[in-house]
Structure formats: C-alpha cells, structure tokens
Length: 388
Image (tube, rainbow, N blue to C red; front, side, top):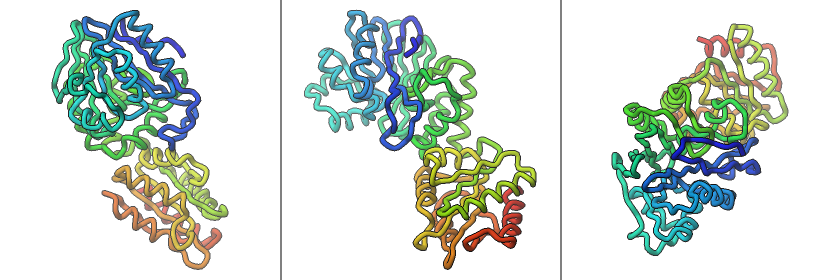
C-alpha cells in the first residue's frame, strides 16, 4: 500500500483490504475497501479508531511504528461498527492505561461488543461541542447520530483544520485504486447512508461553520483539494435531488421481451433529444448500482414483467431497497408486461405510492408478451411525457 501522509503529527495507520468481495456481506466491492485509522502524536496521544479484524496484524504494526515506543493516552471511538471498532478490546489489553472517548450512545452499546471490566473508570464521555485538549491539537466533538448508527460522532481538529468524518465522505475501493471518486462514493452513500438525508443535512449545517482543510473519512481517500465539490455532492444527495441530467430505465425482464421494449424506449427517447439514457437489466445489474442510479437521475422508468401475479423479483428487490432508503422527488414512468394477466404495474405503484413526492406519468404502458406497433405508439406517448 502506498504511503499516506496526513501531517507531521497525524499519521495514517489504516490498511487496504483488496481481498474483500462483499462489504457488509452484501455490497460488491470489485476494488476492495480501505479501513482508515489515524493517530495524533502530541503531549497526549490519541488513536482515531481501530480496524476490522481482517487487518488486525497490519494495523497493530502500523500503530506501533507510528507510536515509536510511546504509549497512547486515548482511543477515540467515532463509530462502533465492527469494521472500525473490532480491535477496541485488543487496544485495551495492549495499553492498560488507555482512556476510551465516546458519547453516551457509544458507552450504551459498547458492552454489547466487549466485556471491559473497568469501563466506568476508563471512559471519557463527550457531548456535542466538547473539546479534548491534546496539547498542540484540540479535538472538537460533533455528534452525527444516524450517519448511519445512533452513536456516530465526528471530530474537528482545530490546529490543522481536519475533519475526521467517520463514515461520512467515504467510498468503496482501496486507497491503491485509481478511479473516479464520484461513482463509488455515490454507491456507498445511497446504499449505506442514504436513508438519513435529514441527519446529513443537519451535519452539513454544523460543518458550514468550520474552516476545514482536510477530510479524513473511515473509508476511501483523504480529501484535501476542492472540498466544496465533495460537500456539494453530499448536499445534493442528502436533499434527494437529481444529480445528473438524464433518464434511468430499470428493467426486470424474464425472457427478454420486456427488455426489448425498454431498448425501443431508449431509442425513442434519444431520437426525441434526451441527452443521456441509461438502461439496466436488473437481473444482471449489481443491485447497489441500481439503487445508486435510481437516485442519480431525476427521471426513472421502472419496467417489469409480471411473475406470480406480482412484479418480477429483481424489480421488487430494487423498489423495496429504494423505499428503505427514503426514495423521493422523482418523475416516474411505468411499463408492465404479461401474457394473460399483466399485474406488475399495480404492484409497482403500490410501493411507489408509499414514497414522498413521486410523480407517476401517464400512460402506464402495458405489453402483452411481445412488443407490437400499438405498444410503440404508447412508448412514444410515455417518452413525450417523461421528457416534459
């Protein structure tokens, strides 16, 4: 892994996990993930998070090298999810005098993961706005509940103007991965944090009062330049606004006939001047990618075959994921297909009707088995309406 430099006093001690195939045992990570951890070297030494069990040995080696024989005073616990907190017990055992810094929720949940017998004597409980003085460096604590667990907090180091942002501003992919930030950060955001837009907006209001020069997340690259770009992305995402101009067609097709109709719709939309049309086969598309694109674009077509008098399961999976993540503020078109009793449109509408500010445009297009000329006329009508 390449050498990551934060500053003279703040050292990166995290690790890349290139072998991981599923993050949280559900999200495909073709380029792995990084588990970021840091240590602040000062009169008082603070470790900022531990690491996932998969990288314990490497992390301990990095920590010992950074400490260079010194003993840490504090372990800051910003988030208790095991990919960051697995080694809290290891640290307590290795450094018997270390104090644990967390909030009231941190210490309510901590015994569910670890049996730390002297926890009451060891803990330092902080609340929003509290400051821990390390000497040259001062940590301001910012509570960030439900981004994306109740105990999450962030820390602003005022001397070097660094925001330790927990899971905020994170992305999939190792630090060795050379790729665009947006795509994997967007997929990470909407699938993991996306439900909590209100909470992210509250955090952004707090952060607007800070002079931030560096953002150090728990996953993904350290952000140093053009920070307004990343903050603006989070503002758009957490307001559930469309980020990109274009139309996303999400298709759940069994034998390919529904997909052919979607291909025809894509052709029609492009002929009518749509600048970008993205067509996805949900049976083959990574579901997290489908969630990401459903949020990315302001206009979405959901197309599904009927199966067992329901929608085809890949469509149900997508819509239920979107509902769970507070999907809203979108203009929607619907296409259904069925041989003897098309019913998927009704099922899709039932789920969409539970979401906020969803406009379903007419006509809803019903195809019976295979695409016919009369269906193409309806697709033209749908295209006209979705483009308005």
